[in-house]
Image (tube, rainbow, N blue to C red; front, side, top):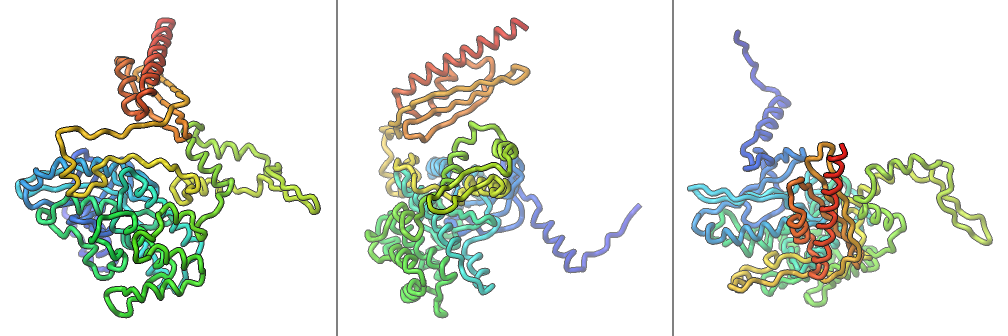
Amino acid sequence: MTMSVPERNSGSEGKEEESEDESEILEESPCGRWQKRKEQISQGNVPGVESASLAMDTEEGVEVVWNEVLFIDRKVFKAQEEKIKEMFENLMQVEHPNIVKFHKYWLDMKESGARVIFITEYMSSGSLKQFLKKTKKNHKTMNVKAWKRWCTQILSALSYLHSCEPPIIHGNLTCDTIFIQHNGLIKIGSVWHRLFVNVFPEASVHGKVRPNRDEQRNLHFFSPEYGLAEDDYAIDIFSFGICALEMAVLEIQANGDAVVSKEAITNAGQSLEDPLMREFTQSCVRHEAKQRPTAHDLLFHRVLFEVHSLKLLAAHCLISNQYLLPENCVEEKTKSFDPNGLMAEIKHGNRPGVQLKYSHVSPLELDKFLEDVKNGIYPLMNFASSRPHPVPRALSLSHEQVETAKSPTPEPQETESRKVIQMHCNLESNEEGTKTHLSLFLKMEDKLHRQLSCDILPTDSSKDLANELVHYAFISEEDCGKLAGFLEDALTRHKGKALASGITQ
């Protein structure tokens, strides 16, 4: 039997067909987890990236971005291959709630050329530039609280990058490379811009390596010394200052010209009614790089700084130690409270006190607040660690520095100087006894704790497993021996108990 299919002439049917075409799977990753679609997207200018497509993470069930860097000459690619691998391995170690996540990469060699494919987080709500345009189009003004919250999140990410050892300079911070999610979470994209410029030779990569610098509409985001001197944190601070200014006024008018002039930037700054906001933005865009404050200093500026509430401190404490608490503990705890029970009371000598009852706090609002804290919307900056974040050297070295750094003598690795003041190990076997889950908790002297976990088999050697865990723990040499002995003893005792249990059964 045959059946004729009517042609799709209506507009809605045409759109549906177009949508189906865009969701068509064009390619899969070697592991099968990532599926590339036909739909092309823009997630900010990334040097050398020929195309960026929407893709699906089949394990997590979320959309991601499939990026491709094409090499015309295979010989050039082979010469750069180890350096490219090292760079991408290092990128996967950058972890911050306000930085777009780098998931995975792999290399694809063909006769026609070579490709580097890497998967990044997809920011579905669009860029900050798009949001500001929509806000201005609807004749609305920027909410000051939202402005402060966004500035804090951007500075939190920059402070993280700049406090790495050695520092990571973004070098491409614009309203196009900052993304905003529906819940108000800000994320910085294109963090790998400077690395790509340094690692990928411009002649060998298909497409421009420095596209954003050449775009006239974004020239005002770059500091006067950009490209003329060695990069340091000051170029990112200048770019942030322009972003903060654009967030406040929604758009810096270019007076019909393609390039935003210095006069337009000055006028935009002067138009701010709040004197603290004016001082804040003007300090970022000073002509002399040395006079610009650091990201950490700006977080303590009077316009942003506030004493964290007890609620926020408690939320961060809860999130930090969540792995020690049972699942849904907050929900279960709030259920047990009497709504009319007294939670706190403020007493005054001359007038009636203030009583706070559990009914004044909505469990749903509390859950949302905890989720926002977990996602990085309310970073706890006043107590940020002064210790630099150890990041491999290749993450920050320029192309020339990488070449000179190569030597037959291996580079000394980062060493951990903090002491471990408490070790806790938990071992739980499954019902079949085929494997055991190990959780290791290390309490450090500066209260920045470390947790490791893995599954072990009955055939695994206690000594070898202990030595392997010590390697991943990244602790001082003095503590390595203690931890190895502690783990070996715990594993041996656990195996002994399991064996005895099996005999008694």
